[in-house]
Length: 299
Image 1 (cartoon, rainbow, N blue to C red):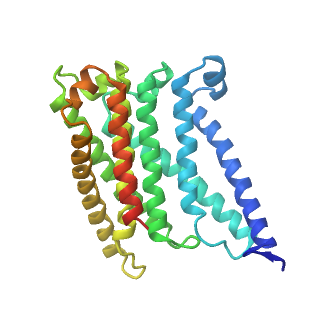
Image 2: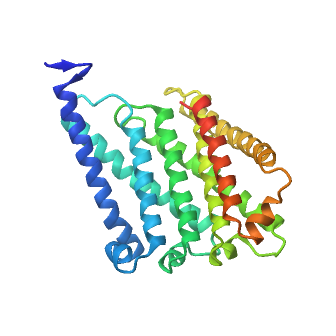
């Protein structure tokens, strides 16, 4: 078999199949988005020029791509047919898990506001938060895939269990931000009201913190030992590592943001003055701390 730098004719065929399935999944996501939203995606994007809907749809594409990097990071399957089935199966599973995680983030963490209704109205703040929800869920799914590092289907139940644990951890982060906003906001409004009012700075800050937290959870994939012969202990290690990583992330983020924006009342700038610049800096710090933890500690 012809081979160049480790790439064979067979592996090129497998790559072609993977890319074809990925494109198919991306296209299907457009119709799934329209079906779930009870809207016609093309009409919202091109006819109504709904910027918020476009951001929300883009979030789904980014999220799916993130998860698929976890699927395609291992070795190829034994046959082209198995490779196609594995990529398609995990791709469909990724869409289902993303939608489930997204649903719980929307309905549990921010139950006082309908992000879907706000996005239909063109609320960009709601779409930014939606972006944070979807992408953070995808990062958690990818970290679970990398942690199990399974070839084929045997590790699928463990991936789902690790995803559930990670999703619960993300819900705790969301509740932490909701309560923190309520405690520090001088006007007395809740986070959900800020979303309805279209406070873009709040949306950027919240979404950035959620994505940073998800990246921090990725550190658990490198900290928690995975033993296929002791699943219960492995999941317990994963849960403990995820919580410890989140606590470390929150502390590191707090220290970093206080140093970078020393002398600045961050909550007042973001919540009352709607300062997008401060919100963007806060989100960038969240991402920077999270990606650093994921890189240094993650699998």
